[in-house]
Length: 70
Length: 384
Image 1 (cartoon, one colour):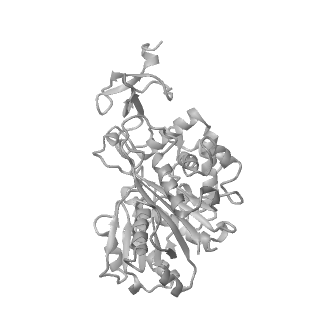
Image 2 (cartoon, each protein chain N blue to C red):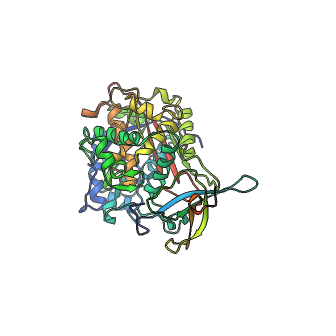
Image 3 (cartoon, helix red, strand yellow):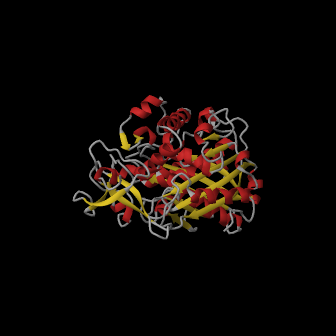
């Protein structure tokens, strides 16, 4: 986001679908950990991470960058 | 609730002020002119108005009453409606049902909003909403739709083409806020708002007011002037969905449109004019499909073939739409109806859609966590 009335800009947010074993799942709007140069893709895997810059103190990080997804 | 009306109901007058930045106007200052002009257009004396509905979101308490007292209308039911961007259209919905039910013979519908009171920027949303607390603003919601669109179906050129068309239409409309045409390069090169949306892919901030006069069959016969019949009036609220939703299939619009077509007894292939909720360029593409103007996945093709501009199969947003005409939230739904009234009575001037006899208006309202949208209104009209 480059324009906002509620947070300093820029920031990244996105819908994250949390899957569960029964396949029902929950969608949450979540802060995304900013990476140099951006690079967020639709449908990419993410994982929870600490982020003192986000309102909640946490954000989702790009699992491809953290190495969790190979 | 069915979108059918119990008895024939007609729009017999409409007016609006040019949308734009009217910083020195109060809500009454914005709306009094259109109210008087709409009554004059209808041939209705102000003392004949039996009830009035006002759509607005940021006008404060008793906005409708404050406007009407300026022109000597009082002692009648006045209802103030907040349904975010759907406020003006929701006012029409409520007024139409009251007229059709025989409660009133003459009803006034007004949409009015003054967004310059906020100084600029994005629309302020409800702070207690959990998504707003994460930084959700309306451009963010539509940017996510656009991201999904680019991933699944189309290109940035499609998004730019919507804005180019809107501004081309708006250039013909003396009431539009933005009356200059733009190129695709200018759209793509304008400053970023919410990736991938640029400034010219977003509707402008502004002020406006529109008024519509609704009457019963008996009054229409007495007036014997220009009239447009309201065939269907649908209002839906959103439904909570905790899981994944298809960002390119807004169910609230799909369901509202289906109900409206059934009530009107005509389908999307029979429409000549559509005024839809293009608050952001991606919205127009998404709503082509949701309103049934084309099959899923074919919105960009419909646009690029010229089917939705003058000379095409169905002219979408001949007024310039929200992207060019402007989008003062509560005023937009009423302004869409004003445009349809002019189109279906041959009064649209340089932007007249030749031979237009049927039309649809569509406006959604608000962003709420867990809902596709908070509200959706669809109305279908036919030349009387």
